Length: 81
Image (cartoon, rainbow, N blue to C red; front, side):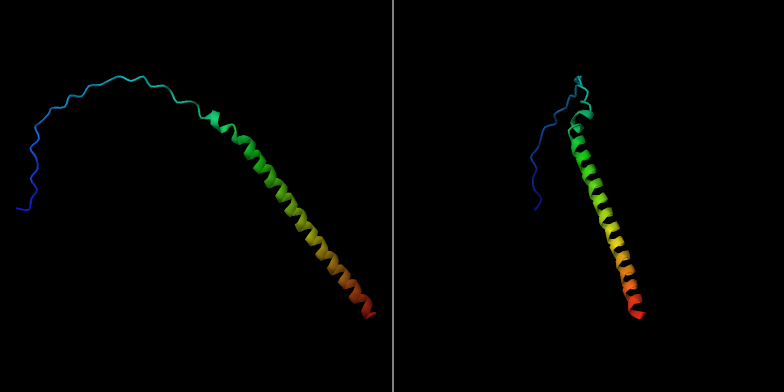
């Protein structure tokens, strides 16, 4: 009663035929990568420069800290005498 009635479809035999295709080889992957070499080199150079600047700031901070400790000890030693 509540089942849908499907239309009757005639059986059609399928015939498959093999059609040979000529496949063209894919282009080499080295071509499109070439424009990005300059960008990668620029990023590496910027990274090296920023790392060198960070190291210079760290060395300066350590030297200022050492100088302040030495000056404080000199001033405290002079006041005790």
